[in-house]
Length: 445
Image 1 (cartoon, rainbow, N blue to C red):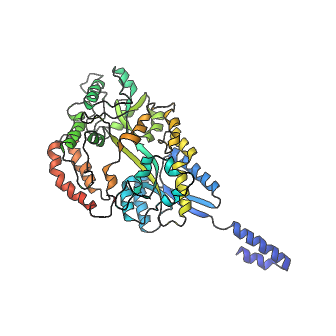
Image 2: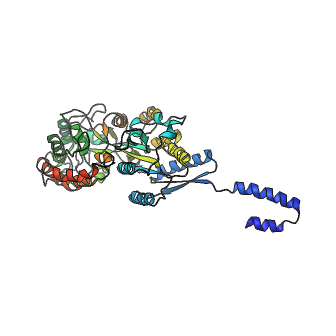
Image 3: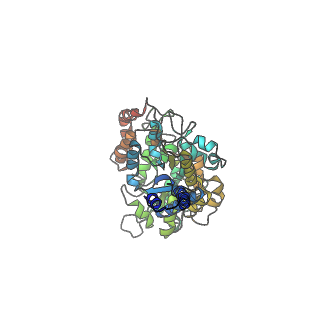
């Protein structure tokens, strides 16, 4: 309409020619920018950092605009699944690890990033943790291996044991070593000394360890005891082995028998913050909150190990960032993913603000030397490189078996209503039947 009005005003050919040139130039400048849509979620500090990274991305890619859409974490997956089904997925989006096998197996959801990474001079596949890269591989049948790379890691989340150093000092107990795990009997003895009734009312005011939930990670106990949820070929549920039931019962007994962990269903998170629990858990994302809210000295150490293996184990989480398979701008979308997962300045800001272990391996020396707790932050690195494991649901597209196990069966053991050796063998047929939904398909197995 602007062009029509201007042409009506033209009375001479020279003026018309000049206006035509102006209109051509203006039209070129007014062309719609290439838009990428990015959808995820984050806390306030992380959001500010990522927005600055995206602004830098836009500056380095003139004519590109990134529409950032933050969604409540509770609504994220459902909304994204609906958008994928409708063919309106954002160009770039978070890939929760518990949905990765499902989306990989479905095909047509996530773009394979290998062709873009291989021709990238910055060599992103050699810059980021190999473990993080491998988590988002797919070979057409099973996740965690193969030539396809369907996302890149936003971060890795090692689940570490954290302790209240002031409570250890008050009880005259030596803090757990950072370079070698205590064995289970040693840990129980230590936590018993830390569990104290300070006011003499017959109930402990300080506990050595947190009980269920949010207590000793049962996954780590199971793995450390030489057991696992699934067989090595990922075809059978194996929660009925003696090693498995022994580990589950040991975790339950920290509260029920040994009385060194808080009673089941206690308010463990708040009790930890209030200095009532001597030993707890944390991920790297908890650092900033702990810096600002804990009134006591704290640090991290390896989780205690089973006498069977003498090896610490714990779980390792992650969040991926992927590209929609149907994006109209795959190269630009790949560049945005790379920015969000490996931009050096952003990675430095994120770890300095206590949000994560850096994705970039070349930043680890500075990360380890940070002059803020945890001072034993190499424990985070050891979990990533040596003994951290992903949850078994990572390999499955139907998690009903896992939900029944963790939400229906195990709580009865933790609360003392049943013994692991009695209840778990009797549930194996039910769990295997539910797990069988994952077999015989092109799934994450």
